[in-house]
Length: 106
Image (cartoon, rainbow, N blue to C red; front, side, top):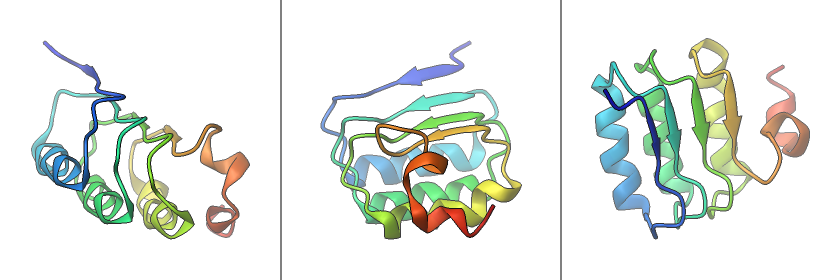
């Protein structure tokens, strides 16, 4: 059974992020998803953050080196307070060391 999926550096855009978001809504198997070094923007981040509201299987999400701004990062802040994701990377460092926009939630 596939539990870890790393698709970094595959030119995945917001459309691809939306497809992954649809999968994550019903996913009961994938625990690690790596989508770093792609072309995901705040729009794709919104779709993924929305999917994490219902997904309780994913424990690691890698989104580093995409085109996600602090606004996009902030979309994940509220979701990550109740989700089971315990490791989340959106920049070259984990978000809690890098993005001031998330600090107010912790």
